[in-house]
Amino acid sequence: MRRVAHEVLPPLAGIAGLIVVWAVIAATTSTTSIPSPLAVSDALVDGLRAGTIQEAALKTLIRLAFSFVVAVVLGTGFRLLIPDWRGALLGWFTLVWIANIYMSLFGRLRLDIKREKVEIGAVEHDVGAVQPRKRA
Image (cartoon, rainbow, N blue to C red; front, side, top):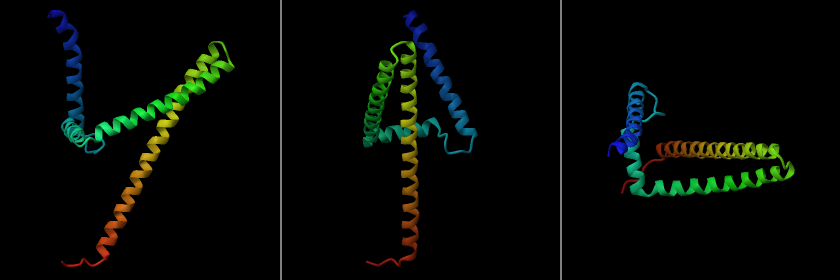
């Protein structure tokens, strides 16, 4: 029992400390980019109930697998071109490089989609404000 306490309690204390620091930072800053731990947990529970977390996790795993396969194929190609340690090193850097490029492109795509949604919402709001509403 004592051994378990020595192995489990320090990581739990570290996690609790990080959550406290996170809550303090979220409370003292006025930016919306750092939500409070309570807001994140509420959003997580709502996402789990709606099924969006599982869908997003599946999509992320598929993207990860695809980028890993592409990087391994390119890295293996470099290893076959240069059959000593330099080929392995070049293959490893290729793996990291491809992953960075893929995630950057995905992030840019998400920003573009979000920007388009905001623009569409603004146009719909403007059009709704201009058109007279029909009474039922």
